Image (cartoon, rainbow, N blue to C red):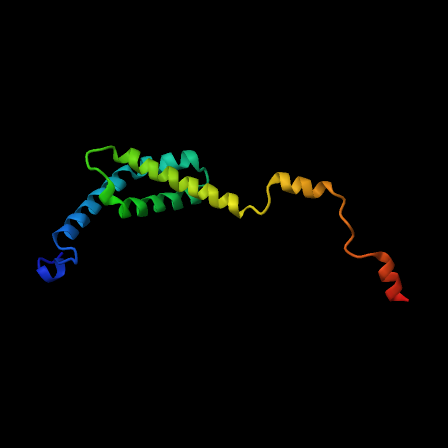
Length: 127
């Protein structure tokens, strides 16, 4: 990093540099607890690909909300709470992407379907 003040200046002044330092400390805590967070997420979401995506999303939220984290408190619990909310979002998205519920499918299938076309019309057309 450069010691040139021109490169270290931020639009927020000293507050911006304190904010970025805190963000970096919180990101370091994330890296420290990454294996535990991955295990926590995998215990709730067995699909490895989705679990890895969730872990990345948690990192983004942790980074964005770094200023909200109270240093000296339980980082792992805070990050697990974020992971839980991200998992709930995923479950809601999955539920919305499912076209019809089982009950609706069963109800629709209980009615005898009407033929798409009437054979008598075909016979008339053939004449």
